[in-house]
Image 1 (cartoon, rainbow, N blue to C red):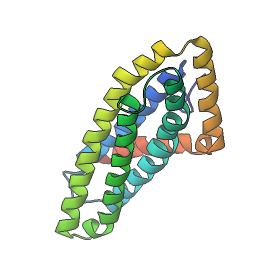
Image 2: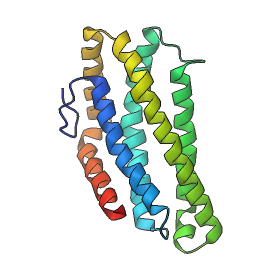
Image 3: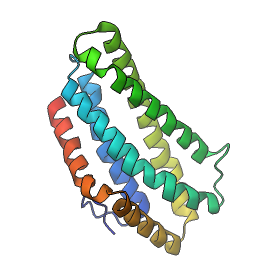
Length: 187
């Protein structure tokens, strides 16, 4: 199995890790942009990417496919890693809404809106970096231990079906390209 960005991932956890690397490019670009005047086009594209790729495609695979399988393998949701990660998704969504709600005013020079946007974006970047680290170095390690070859194959199939069913396949390369473009704009 390879992931939609042609990275030749061979396991479901590699697919998710490779998507993390794409997301991190956008986080890096956002961080750079925070030291500059607010660019409405840049942040509009970043919000689009975070809502549709990071949350709509990537987090959906984790929430709808990976987490339920891990729970059935004995990894607890409540008071455990999965519950913590789900809470972080909600915190991230709230921060993205705050960024989006302040973008127009911030781009027009409203200092208060600019401050709110910068604080929310900084908090989001920190949250997602910590979140990715937990998944890459804790949850995915547990998943690789808990899921045997058969379950890994089933997970790969579930990821492929998820990509096809929510039309991420048609958007995936678009968002990988967008991440590259946002990275270039912030250089």
